[in-house]
Image (cartoon, rainbow, N blue to C red):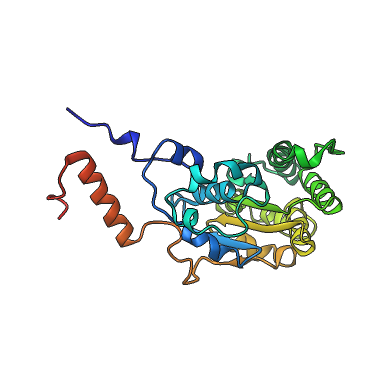
Length: 274
């Protein structure tokens, strides 16, 4: 009889709570969380299918103040579960995913699609933290950057916990412009007072004022971050730093342990592997 391994061996699972709740095999990378806390604007780059979205989800679940009651369920048995930092479950989470950006062939279309995509994460944060935001209402729902500015201003004025921002695939749509040889539009997006530069300027200001604890970005290439220049010159690219080199992907030892687990669980023997 063929044994189905899909129950415990995950494939394309990017939601940390889902992975833990369903008992999937998990390679524990949570020992990197304390190291990340030394940075306010870390950027980590890896090719696709390296687990970047799962890392973003892990950080979101770790720092979200509204998930404090689930800390043991989600992190029990992990490194960070046994060695939690004082910052766990202390922040309001805004999680962006630029990989879902709908492309357009002009600046107006890109800006409109950017706003449509990115107003939702700010609204979700306010909804999840309504106990702190009371009767707060946005003055607009048309401009995602203005919405972010408004919640940051409210948080500062009312001494709320800082916001922890996560941006997955920060360069997804700008890379598409480059690979389609649309350099003029790419330059418009990353220079002057474009919607993207303005967005990152607001984040930079929030970090400086203390209303944002961290903005953690994942991506594939450093090009866009470099081209944003003064708009976001606080970015700290950790990709090749020795302390973070193995934060995503499997080391040889991790792959070895994983393969032995699979063979032992589904064949009852490791002879072929050995």
